Image (cartoon, rainbow, N blue to C red; front, side, top):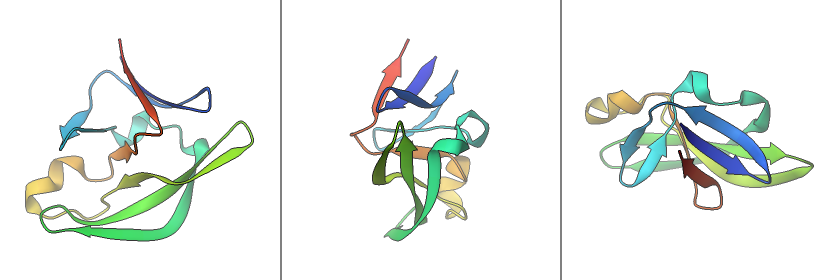
Length: 95
């Protein structure tokens, strides 16, 4: 099992993730959406497309722009469409 943990809270857990550039991208159904709040932040990657961000909310704390996803990725990144990845402040635990 692969888990994303922040502030003593499991944000996502899945049997498998898509790993791209060293980041685990969790399938949409494995992410606990109650801990994510849409952000206005966006970035662009030349081969993946435009990333949208989430603030992470857990145990009374908010981590700004700690999670991102590609709602409409470019062709080579279609396998991570709507999958969620996390910045290193979020612990990725692999059992």
